[in-house]
Image 1 (tube, rainbow, N blue to C red):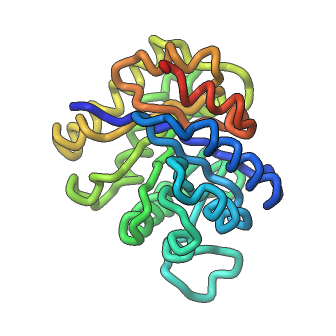
Image 2 (image 1 turned 90 degrees about the horizontal axis):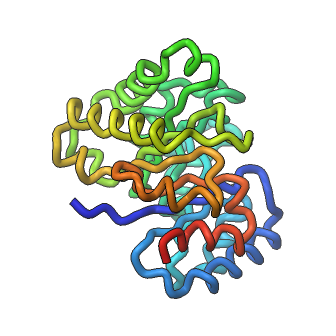
Amino acid sequence: MSRTPLIAGNWKMFKTGPEAVAAATSLAGLASDVADTDIMIAPAFLSLPLVSEAVAGSNVKLGVQNLFYENEGAYTGEVSAAMVKAAGADYAIIGHSERRQYFGETDDAVCRKVKASIDGGIIPILCIGETEVQREDGKTFSVLDKQISNGLNNFCSRDLSSLVIAYEPVWAIGTGKTATPDQVAEIHGNIRSLINKLFGNELAMSIRILYGGSVKPDNVSELMSLGDVDGALVGGASLDAETFIQIIRYDK
């Protein structure tokens, strides 16, 4: 089954509104002839409406770095799926390792956010990944299996037709380290096998699995050549449009 690659940029807590607009406008121009790869950038919440206007009519889609699982209510500081959808978001990054590490986000919260995204017409990008200690202890697969099983608890395959999974080895994020091609191939294959076990072959073969661990122009082609790698979740290298377009054009 053919899966359209997705190259997604997570801008994290970088760029003011004007800076985000400038970078997004540049990227939209550079990527105007990209036809067979989906492109997404996730600016900070405050920049989302501004960037949405800047990339309107282009092939650059927008995402958010988080959302809350309730539709509305007395939840100071949170935003709902409906709010980000109205502001122009098509994707939501959910369960990023930094959300889990710094803000105590649990698998249960991740599961509820996945549901809120789907219910709100937002494509969820479910992030999973192990720490360096967990890898050294031989717990990589058990950690990933738990994050997927708990993060997708009580869903059926029909619910998850838009789901994207991003494998982000925590030990490789922002460190310059990258999992070897053999490691990535093994882990992505295991993820697809688990989806098959939990939800069936149709979803397993259609779901896009991204790699997210210090992806750069000089390693993206090798990573994308692996059969179970369907794209990349890019951090720092997505902040500069000239660098990010090199990743997007990995085989162009």
